[in-house]
Length: 335
Image (cartoon, rainbow, N blue to C red; front, side, top):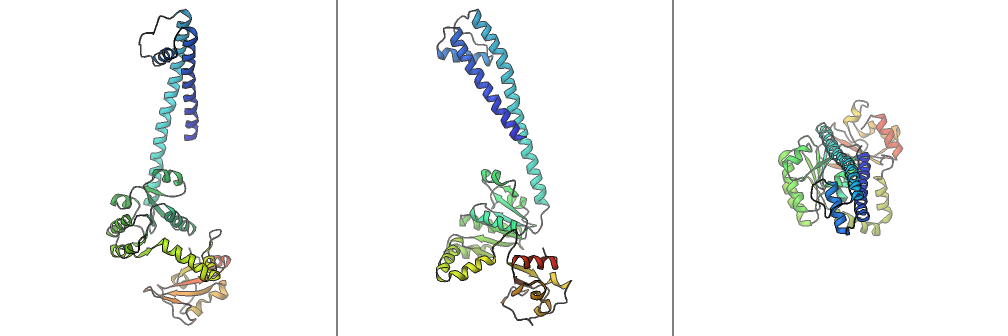
């Protein structure tokens, strides 16, 4: 609808310009007017303001003036109606779109709130989308919002304002990712979000090493320094290139698949009597290999023993090819 109205506006403006050019050339042709006088006569004629003529008009000029008035009234009336329809239609569509977005956000629970849709925020959003994790992005740049609003749920505003965070459903959210380039702004976002939701798991970006402790003190659970990670990664590619390349491929996605999966023990208990990793027997069932175990208190065990006793609140980290991961998810109805 908006595209149709835009094309009609182009036509309306083109017709208005043609009428003005037609009037200027006509007055120049029918009367001995200068170009300035012809422009003046055209403007006062099409706008019907009622000023007097520059000089007396002969019969031909009067007939031309009558024709110009009738033509301009219809064309300018058409242009005004098109422009009005476009403005009203655009505003109505924007209002309906905002209401629809708000309704979708209000229905979310245990979602992720992402502050900032720059390079890091966009990458985080793509990753969350690949894992079908619901998320909302807080962004203040209208151009960015208009460019991606068909793909992402946006809330316009600053992430350090209570109203904006509440609109993004911060009290129902499970995670907050603040990826704003400015450390001071990230600090304010973390403080505000922590006040609104004490159970929120907050992940913050930091540019300066000195900001890491401050962000953690403000309430961030994890602080990530993209520049440091990038530098370490590049240096590691020099020291042990094959190992780093292999590790990169472990988390590489294709067709919404991955080579690593984190699964809660509770996902297995309804279908398998599992007291230990040996009881799960995932290698035989799915082809996946268990490479890690996360205890309920957050302790990580790398390459756990087969006789390790499992706890309901624990998690296992499994490694497998994409088709093996899919088989695991289908067999135990995970995700």
